[in-house]
Length: 422
Image (cartoon, rainbow, N blue to C red; front, side, top):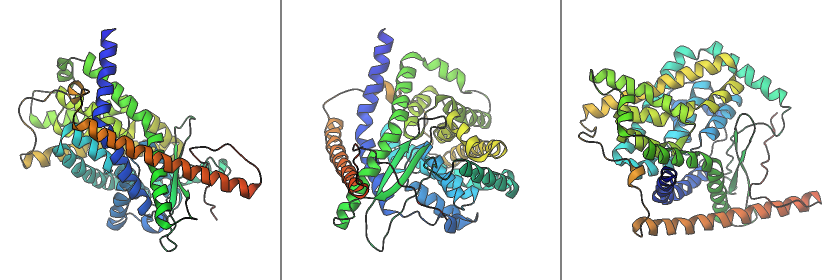
């Protein structure tokens, strides 16, 4: 049983090394989600052009990093009138250009990989645009939209909609709180809403509560994926020898063939791992130590959007034919983005050479050092934001009791109110 305890130790030590970056990253992400308005999806993203793609990428970077929430957000934008390709660009940016992912990637693998991730995410959006023009034709988009509308009608326009609406009233200066609901059913969908919080108090207080809601809800969506990611990385670091990884990734032969094979294998490993977004980074560290190419690491990190549960969600959202084409576009874009990053960084002589460092999963340990102090600060910040979240939730429950004349149990995750659609 020593292997089991060692695996759990590696997983726990990795989380300890990363906890402060996660807390501060989610806090910054919450600030961005509250300050950036995303209402006018159909007006901004109704056509596929440079402006709509740039806006989709920028707004996606200001969103939550959860792959399931990003998928629900893309579907919500598409259902509200956005073109399919900008909606997919928003989805990619939501998982690959967010602050917390960059913070954890910097901590585990260094700034060079952060630069590669950012550059690759931009390549990724570009490849989605080009491939989408070829495979996601107007006919396919119409079929996907008809399926989405029919699915919406079958749900009765009720609380089973999966929307990702950010409503922010700059004119009145009211803070908007954000809530996420996790449907534990077949599709594993995430809901992501804004609803009023702290409107009776000063503007800064409402906004601070909104940041706290966004912070807590992001954690509530991602903790399972992150836990799975750390556990998988811990077990792989303990049980899988380095020689096995070297056999999985092509090491000899022409450099171009090695790059292509590694870029193809990366997303396939991600698909089988069932891990999304930030949870991919510890495993990416293990893969890099095991011999995967520079571009292969990038392709693996991008692969969080083709895990098997999400493929089933695409089928449910868009229908069989469109979902198949979307999956092909996503996979090819991941491979081509990894190859593009690999070629760019090789041309700039930035790809690390020489022996690979040991995986961060095996080097992680518990110690009283700067990481411990940062974690203490992160715990204090997280506790403060959790307090604000609970206070705001209790205030909403009390106001709901006064309006409806009957009480209900306070909940840390308030039931979101869906905007009416006419």
